[in-house]
Amino acid sequence: MFLTEATKERIVKAIQDAELNTSGEIKVHIEEKCPTDDPIERAKQVFQYLALHKTAQRNGVLFYLAYGTHKFAIWGDIGIDQVVPSNFWEGIRDSMRQYFLQEDFAGGLQMGIREAGNQLKKYFPYLANDVNEISDDISTEPIP
Image 1 (cartoon, rainbow, N blue to C red):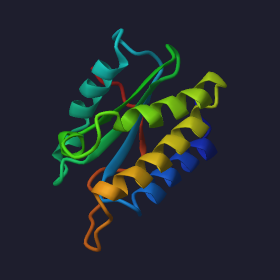
Image 2 (image 1 turned 90 degrees about the vertical axis):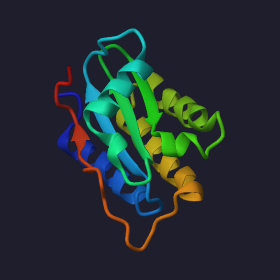
Image 3 (image 1 turned 120 degrees about the horizontal axis):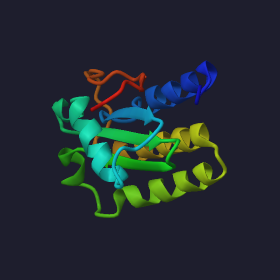
Image 4 (image 1 turned 30 degrees about the vertical axis):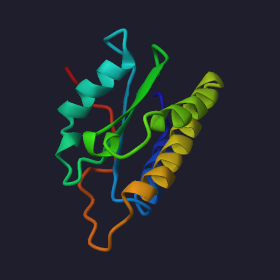
C-alpha cells in the first residue's frame, strides 16, 4: 500500500481546508505507473476521465502522481488558465518536487494543495453558496 489510511485522511483534510478558501475544486489522482512519457498529458487524460472540467466556473485542479515512475503534474481547467499568470503552477510544482525527492509524497501533496488553495482564493474566492462539485476523496481507480 502506497499511502496509509491516516496519510490519505491528512491529504483529504488538506483538500477540504483549501476549498474553504476558494470556490476552486481540487482533486488528487494517484497511480503506480504513468502510462505515458509525459505526466502532463496523462494528467489531462485523467482530468477528462474524472470529468473535472464540468465545474460551473471551470476551476477544477488535478494533482496527478505516479509514484512508481516518479512522475507528477498539476493540471488546472481553462477557467483558471484564463485568469492566472502563465507560470502559476510552476512554483507549486517546484516546491512539491522538493518533498518528492525526499520520498515525502504525502507532505508534498499536502503542501501543494494548501498553496493551490491560497493562490486560487485570489481569483476564485470562496462563495457563501459554494457547492462542493468534486468529491474530495483521493482517486486511485484504474483509468484507461
